[in-house]
Length: 496
Ligand code: GLU
Image 1 (cartoon, rainbow, N blue to C red):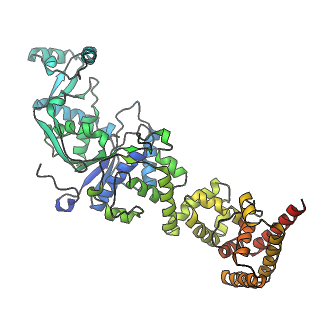
Image 2 (image 1 turned 30 degrees about the horizontal axis):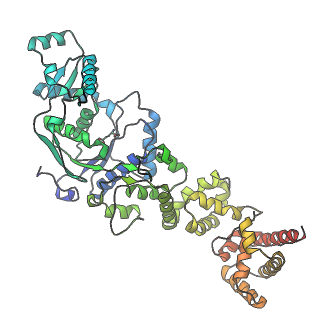
Image 3 (image 1 turned 60 degrees about the horizontal axis):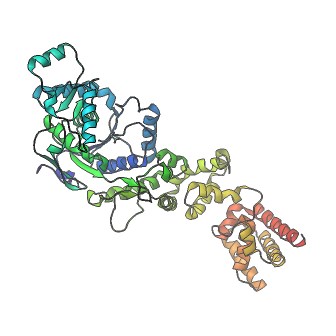
């Protein structure tokens, strides 16, 4: 296998890499599938190759258009654009059958007329004896005249691949050399008696037709790879490179499933996650970019992507880390990239309609810019934005007990604050800051003794962006009205 070029240096190879993502449309686009798609995409884009999409819809019963749509939508949302036309595997049946005919013609495959019931009986028998069932090729042996008679009678039969002696091995780009003794591989079926191909045949036939140079997929497919390599050779096609990326587990170390929460990419899209954060998070499932780097833009991921960083051990899907990652991207991305994701969150939470937001577009952009630093999700931003939209404020009981402990004294400070702010000719953060610091000095108290109660009056909360930014974004009239309301509330609380 000396003709195999290291996958990290495909530039040394005359052909740019052609990779594919080949999901079966039998459910929603799973995060594991999306992660595999992302690795393929990164590899193709990094080395100027092509990333192709093949929908493996041969299992008609389990495949659905809805799942196919979810795959398209999920890839589009993640920004994983593919090259060329989508290939639907089911449309290639004639080629699959023709490839089987070629294998029959060269003797690499043979017809097996053994009735399925007989195979079942032998399998059950082997199981009862505690041995692994392996098809015995002598069962299928027929004389030429017997074969001709059965074919003439149209007797149903499967086609099996004749596994040669020897060892099948490949240099896996993730695992290093992997070898399977051929004696452990039975003569496997490649065409069923209903003339439909099995997975291994269809995949190899399609990968050859699509000119795939690197097969990157989940390591649950490792046991299929020796069979596929044998098929490539028997079909006279060059064997592509293989990279088997690790499975994804939940934080409890068990295979990721619904028990661990949302596993469909679409769920995260509808939760308002940023696609760049999702991609960054997915990239770290089985890949380590080195230098302790975790937060990366797409460009950074492309720059750093290499097979050296791909890991063998299972990756852990930690939803808390995904939240954290989203917060990092919310704060880091250009505001223009964040804004489109924010509008739906406001509409979802009923904070404001799209029209209302469009009316005050600049103000709204500024507010999002202010709030995004403290948020992990766009829904957080919408929640935190509530006080900037409503006329009244709900006072958080913890904020009241912490910052408004002495109701009388607080009411006095807030009244004085209101007066000072009302007297300002311009509503400007520097002017407000100078005025309130001067007031603190006059009252002989620290700035915090004014700012903290003021924050509760304006937002109802103990944490918010800088208080002068809050004043600016709540606006003059509303800020003064809120101070009036806070004073009234504090006084009524005292008399109650
Ligand atoms: N349809 C297979 C799957 O979804 C594709 C495996 C492959 O990439 O060869 O697991």
